[in-house]
Length: 72
Image (cartoon, rainbow, N blue to C red; front, side, top):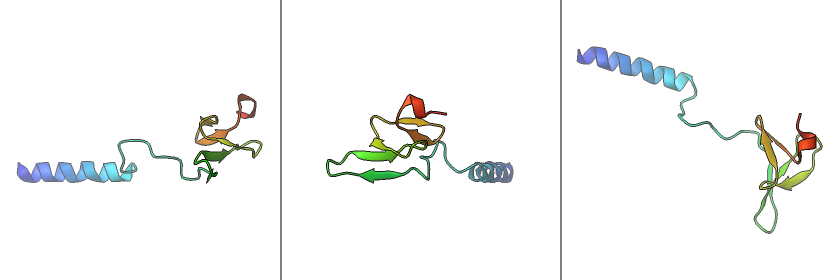
């Protein structure tokens, strides 16, 4: 009985690691960021290349955009 629990646990752990190993979604890896003197984070718009404060930017499908007009 104990052996079966260990095997099932090992299989579930293997599937968990194979699926990415996290319970929460990860932050995008290639998220361009720069910081200015005020400490506000700047991100680059995927469409037009403009840098905008992260608080004002739009995040859509893993990419940053400066406005609704630049959204795909």
